[in-house]
Amino acid sequence: MKFITIYNTIHTSEIAIIRNLLEENDIDFVLPDMATDSASGLAGLGISGMRVQVPEGQQEKAVSILKSRGFS
Figure 1 (cartoon, helix red, strand yellow):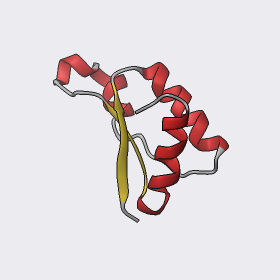
Figure 2 (cartoon, helix red, strand yellow):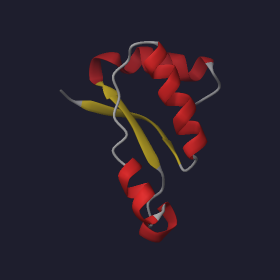
Figure 3 (cartoon, helix red, strand yellow):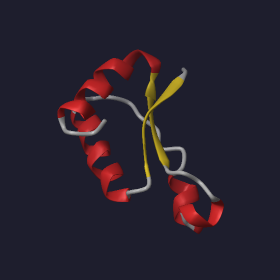
């Protein structure tokens, strides 16, 4: 299964909101950078943010949901 990045942020509060939105709408997702963020912080590694990824087939629905809630 191929996952596509639909959102990138440095704010863990945004990640929490997006997680809830995706879970409420039965959209699968992965947060591949959460462990890295927790381990040493974004600035320490020069990472530009945490990615939210969804399966390719759910990308349009997920992006639509995020946009409707003010995430672009």
